[in-house]
Length: 382
Image 1 (tube, rainbow, N blue to C red):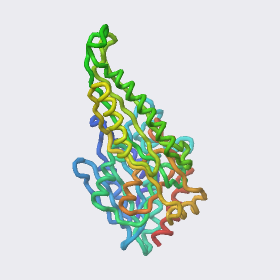
Image 2: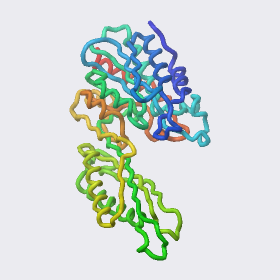
Image 3: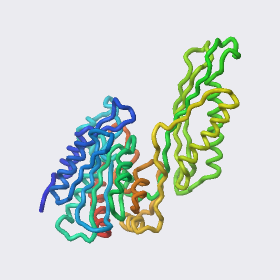
């Protein structure tokens, strides 16, 4: 039987390859070396491995590795990038795998490089079997920032399959719903003047106070109209994240900028909420005779919901013994749904460890996840 390195070696090699994606160009890195390493291992097992460059993003690529042929099949999907990290806050080297207290520490162990060695281990049990439907391992770029990898897949119309499991950290509990995310900027340009006479200027800061008050009122309206008790936070959220403006106490503020995010429930539209906010801002601009600019900091990710009675959801519930849940964080699931795949989020590790110093995955979750993935492969590929 063809062979690949053991689990620890694979995870160690993946963690050692920096692959930060960030909206800040100074922090952004490529993921191509990670994808090429995965392609090498999967090719050894007999997978047909395609490394697909992402247009406009040098040194970044997706991987579609396929075992078997024919229509349908199962995709085991994950992203190869990580968030930036504060090395001085880590007790362990973030780019070197450390085993301690029955945990593997390292950047991406939980979110979500650790999923790939597990998926590969699960796949080794099937490389010499005749699959009735293909098994596909999908690795993407830029999930933590621009979603350029997922967007490139939608533009290509690939992968072609019937089912997809995204191995984000869910504590091995199936997830069939998540909220959307949008991150927006509001910039107000006023008129500076001597603070002793308000008539000499037009305060951007006072206009922003008006904007924030109306945003919070709009948030209340959204939460009254939209509720989903499948979520622990059962209403849409809108968070005023940071604000910057002005330069001195004795000057009327000439400029102010607010960044906020919103996380909407399935059935709600990011674009519709943006249009509502544009209308709100236009009203403030007219009333105060002031310039207001509004733009998105990221394209945003749609909310996600898979049918409760889908074959994938039912099978995952049977294999795990848990009802499918809902989470607040966003994933690539809506993009795979656009490709026509029944999609579920299910993986080892905990989202509580993601994006944190000393990120880890517990050793006790590895074998159960391998067994779980093998059960899904048997159900949908054999």
